[in-house]
Amino acid sequence: MSPVRRLRDGAVKPLISPDLDSADEAFDDFDAQDLDVRDLTGGETLRVEIGPDLAGQRLDKALALAAPSLSRARLQALMAEGQVLRQGADGSPAPVTSGSAKAILGVYHIIVPPPIAAEPLPEAIPLTVLYEDDWLIVVDKPPGMAAHPAPGSETGTLVNALLHHCGTSLSGIGGVARPGIVHRLDKETSGVMVAAKTDAAHQGLSTLFSKHDIDRLYLALTRGAPHPAVGTIETRLGRSPHDRKKMAVLKTGGREAITHYRVERTFGPPDRPLAARVACRLETGRTHQIRVHMASKGSPCLGDPVYGAGAPAAPVREALRETGFARQALHAAVLGFVHPITGETLRFETPPPPDMAALEAALEAL
View 1 (spheres, rainbow, N blue to C red):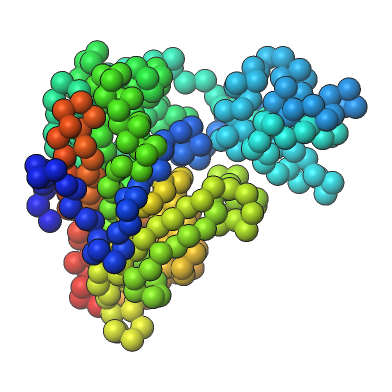
View 2: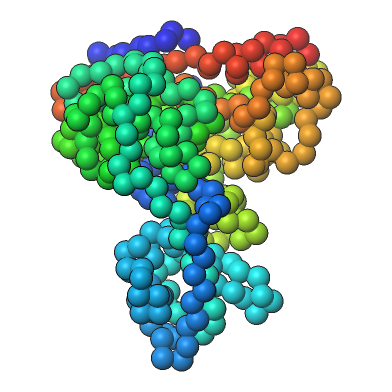
């Protein structure tokens, strides 16, 4: 792959062969529900009991009355993040995510994250800048860097680096904790990200995401190979009913999630591959979508500590050990979009970083 490729002919080059393309090449809209599942260790848990006087009202309203220290808006945000739980008849809590649902008699637990700095500070962190103008900046995010401050990653984030690099020019629409951030990658996922430097660019990029006018391709190294070799995974994704820090394929509820994939090559015996390199194009952009979808096909991303249940074959384990690879093998390789201000069609492509390239080289020897 070439490090950067910008198209100027008015068309974004298809990311996967035409049989996988649709009229609506999409990446889903960014919103608060698509943020990383947060580690809330050190936060405060409020125990709130809903009595007969509040039962039957909207849940967000009832909880705001029962816990006056929290606004309805704050409660809605916490519900979207899976941090409001209702204690069931068996005593185990389950997340509730709809503020418009009716409040039910019983005990609710509200997990309030520990406070973080009101405003992130600039940090002189090196950035690999792929493109920059007066309105936006495109970077190749390394693995291990969080997109924005959150509990457990208050410093050393892309936002901290952008504040130092761009000064005061970042868009403020994302809020004080996430200036300029229009979309995000998981902390341990590498690859191309765009950030807005002005409010006009932020609004324009957000519109592109909401209208599915963003091209985005990921490369994954997986345990085994998904079958068939080319296909589409279409499910509902939402918080796992068994573990609020994980996402899961749901039979009902959740949100629509669609991933188009193609096995680019396999490693090991052709009839029983031990690993594969898979290109994934997102039609929606849910939290951990590719990681969950690959796991649902029995081929989770190698090194994934959350969704990689089950050990890979011994030769693959040895490749992981020899290279010291210790994260999900997932890289956002391509980002293509129409510049929201100039109208220029841009496309950026980066190769996997050295750690993932080393793992693939070790797999080639299988």
